[in-house]
Length: 631
Image (cartoon, rainbow, N blue to C red; front, side):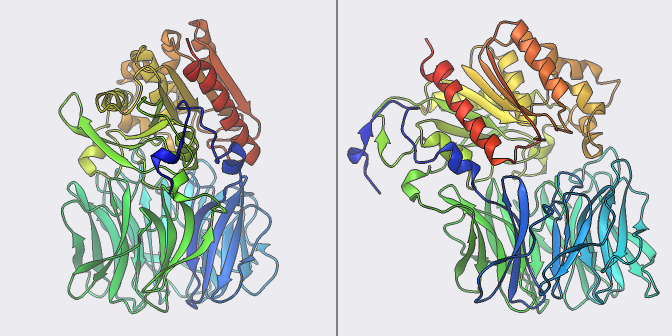
C-alpha cells in the first residue's frame, strides 16, 4: 500500500479513478447459493445486466451454466426464492412467471407451470414427486403444488392468508411448514408460523393445521426442519431482540436455543427465500449468521449444551444466504467487505475458499475505502448511527482540505446500510468524495425499538437523522460543510426530497432514483405487498391525511432551491413514472435546476448495464457542474 507521501496532490472530487462507470455496470450480482443433497455440488445465481442464470460446481470440476433463458427470477414480493436444488434436481422461477425443472445431469430446463401470475420459493417433496411453491396473481396469494414434470395442472394447497413465504418440507414428507401474514402487517411487523400434516394420497393434502408461533405483533421467519425430523426451528421476536426456537414435533414442547441481549438473526423479508441459519447434517448443531449494526458474523450453536462459538470469516464483514452442507460440517454463503467485492465462499470446516467472484478484482485494497462508525443523539436524545467512508485513492490525496461528501439514505425504509461491498460507494470515494451511509431510526440491525421508532413518523425521523448525519460530518471535521450532497433511491429518495424541502440551506444538491413523492399514490397505486405499509409508517387514511400531505414532497417541491438529479424507470410498478414526472415539474416551477432522466424498460431498481453506466456518467457531470465547480 502506498503511503500518503507517495501520493499526488489533487482537488477532492477530481481524482482520476480506477473505478469507471462501465466497470460498475459490468459487475456480477449474486443472489443465492445452495448445496445439492450430495454435499458435493453447489448451485448459485449470477446476474449480469439484469439477466440471471444458474451456475453449478461439483467439487474439483469447473463451474458450468445450468440455464441460459429465461432469466431466473422469483417475482413475488420484491423477488427472491429464485430456485431450489436437491436430490440432483433444480427447480427455478423464470422471469416469465413459470416454474422450470431440470436435473443436474440434463441439458435443457422445461416449464412445469403455465405462464400466469408470479411464482417463487419452490421446494421439492422428499419423495421427489411434488413441488410446493408460492403463487400470486397480483391480488390473491396462495401455496400451490405441481408434479415435478409438469404433467398435471397446478393446484392450490393453502389459501386464505394475504401473503405466503418460505414453505419447508419435513424430511419424512409428512409435515409442511410456512410463514403467512395478513394486511395491514408486513412480515417483520406481524406474521404466523403455520404447521400442517401432509396426506400421502395421489396428491398432497393438508390437515391438522396449527399455528405454533407468531401473531399480529409477533413476527416469525425461516421455518426449517432438522435433518433427523425431530425439530421445527424458527426465528421470532423476544422484546427488543430475536430468538431461535425449537419446536418438538413429538410432543409440541418448545425450547429457546438462542436468546441474549443484542441478538439479531434476521433482516426484514422484502424478498422470498432469505436464510439466516442452517442445520448441521447430524442435527446436533445449527450454523447461524448474527447481524449487529450492519456487520455480520458466522456462529455455530450446539443443541445439547446451548453454547455458541464464533467462526473466523475474516476479511469479510457481511455474510448472507447461508447454506449448510447436508453431508459435512461445511457452509457456503455470500461474503464481502468494503474492500472485497462480493464472492461466493465455502467454509470447509477450517478455511474459507472462494468459489465465485463478482468482479475481476484487478484493484487492490488500497483502492477501496475503510469504514468509520459514527453516532450522535437525535433531538429526543436517542442514539443514531451511520458509517462514514472517507475519500480513498491509491494514487491521490488532497492534504488538509475537507472533502465534499455524499450523505446516503438507504431504501426500505426498514433496510440497513450494511458494512458490505458497494461499487457505488467506491466510485465516489475513489474520486475524492466522502460517503456517509445513514442508518436512521427505522433501520434494521439495532433492535426492535430502533426499527419501531419510525412507526407513524416516516418523513420526520429519517429527515431529522439525515440532518443529524450532516451535522456530525461537520462537527467531526470530516467534510466541507458547503459541499454536502444528499442521495438515495425509493424511500431513500423520499428522504432526499424532504430534506431539501425542509432544510433548504444544509445540502448543496440532491440525487435520487425512483423517489417516493406522493404518499397518497403510494397508498393506492402500488403493488399488493406494500398496499398497507403506509398504515404503519404514517397511519391509516383518512385519519392520517394531514400527515400524508405534510410529508408528500410533490406538494412542497417548489420550495426546493438546490440542484436536483432524478432518475426513473418507465416500467416501475412501485413508483410509477407519472408521479416522478409530476414531482420534477413541481421542482422546476420553483426555479431549481433539475437533471431528469428516464430509462426505458427499467423498473424499481436499475438492472441493465447500459443504464447503470449512463447514470454514473450523468451523476459525475452533475456533481462537477453543481458541486465542485459551483460559484
